[in-house]
Length: 261
Image (tube, rainbow, N blue to C red; front, top):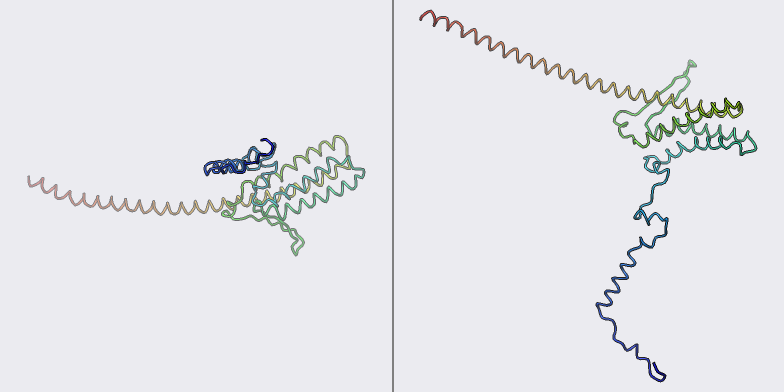
């Protein structure tokens, strides 16, 4: 553009309707496709907007995630503090802390998680005569069918696995003659085995109740079958009796016919 000539670019004709529509479509398509602009490593970049489950995703799938988390929390912390007890200068502090965590775990498993996750509960009380009365309770068969399979696996896995770990630690401590650390291991094994015995007893009683109900149902079926069989046999007997009577009535007529001939 030479000097002195006015700028006439603003007088150019406006874009047509088709051109503006194509630009709007391009802008909309560009703004709508956000997956390609996701940062590398972001869950939306590879999962299509669905976050990948974490290592403890099975707890989120539980019907009682809070109870499942606390079912594993205290026993895990007790094991961690015991295994890394050498990093602490004061062993008495670690000893007291592990025993407190084990006590919290025992109370939680006995009174909360067993009732919520698998529908079992056990306790004992002292009677007037001074003897201990042990009580084992479980849900009925209809309610037991509603127990989540994930909750059951979390409960029983969290109940038996620590006993195996503490048992191995007991063997190692006995070989290395670590008497002070064996105190924690013995307390852990005692509390864990107590819960295992109680809940195993509850589970056996639950199976016995279901077996009794099945036996009662089978007995009722046998009674009904026996009644049906007796009716069938009586009907067959009556039919056979009717046929025999008809045959006896036909025999004299045949004999009289032969004599006349």
